[in-house]
Length: 158
Image 1 (cartoon, rainbow, N blue to C red):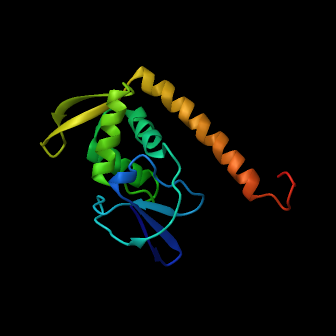
Image 2 (cartoon, rainbow, N blue to C red; image 1 turned 180 degrees about the vertical axis):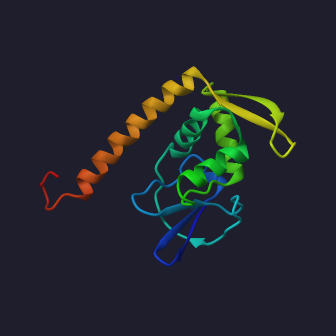
């Protein structure tokens, strides 16, 4: 289920866990939210089509700087996107488990800075390869998408 609300000129998109592998990737300011994101925001329905696989690549990219627990991953994505991307907890953990099954990340239990027990995820060699491939795929997709969107007339090439 997807939801949105407008706040000034900023578009907020909420992504529920049933769409956990399909977050929105947009040019400009867009926000990925869900019913219970780490910010706790909620909103109204929309009909946006979401790009496949972006949550996975965001997680893999986050782990290039070392192991992190789930909240740390979500927080880094939100901070790195200037508060634009906010991932729902359930969606994040479903994606992390899927990435573990694909052996792109592995995990071990540890203690957080707040002295709490948490599972820390680490990027594997296979995960680094997958990240490079996904970045290239997304770049190619984005380039093709904007060639179409920037076309000035029917049959014209950008």
